[in-house]
Image 1 (cartoon, rainbow, N blue to C red):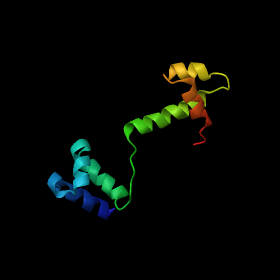
Image 2: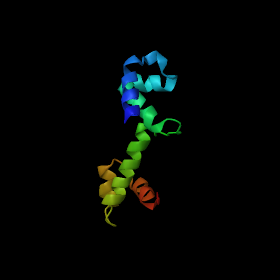
Image 3: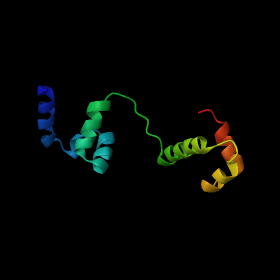
Length: 95
């Protein structure tokens, strides 16, 4: 617990310019505290963050799979603004 208090105390002296470039970008958007917490929890790891549109597409595709009842490809295509072929393709993918 002493180590945590010690690292928290040092937060007051951290400036944006003292951070590595990648963390500076994160700190500019979310704040220095969040950037340091990310560093503390994930430092040294390679971390992939998907593009927003890719993430949303994956979520949409999973929703389509969850809502499919075996007979509702056309309504799902209309609901998600896709073609029936696209819906079939999504349903055929395992992942």
